[in-house]
Image 1 (cartoon, rainbow, N blue to C red):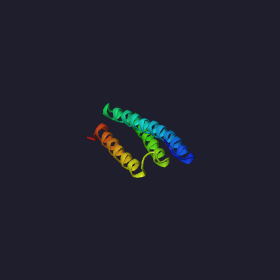
Image 2 (image 1 turned 90 degrees about the vertical axis):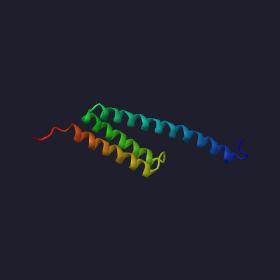
Image 3 (image 1 turned 120 degrees about the vertical axis):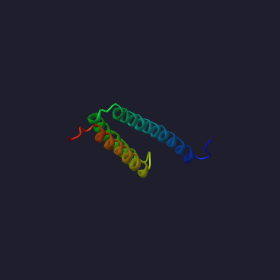
Image 4 (image 1 turned 30 degrees about the horizontal axis):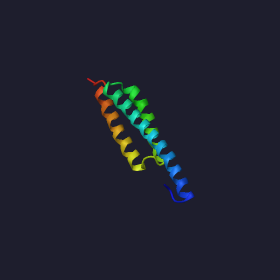
Length: 95
């Protein structure tokens, strides 16, 4: 139990933020899984749109402090590399 009014208020605030953070992190994981599933199935055009969505979500999460900026940057970079590799694999070869 908090000993002061301010500590009680901080506890309530912390609980609200934890719920919000959990929700955002769950959404990030869902978007990432959807994106990776599209890449695995070879749906490059849909994966490009999904990458845009997931990259935007990572940036917003970093902006609001849910995850760190470096974490968002690293995730975006690695997802972009996978998209590039998938695009090259599915591109028709020039003969």
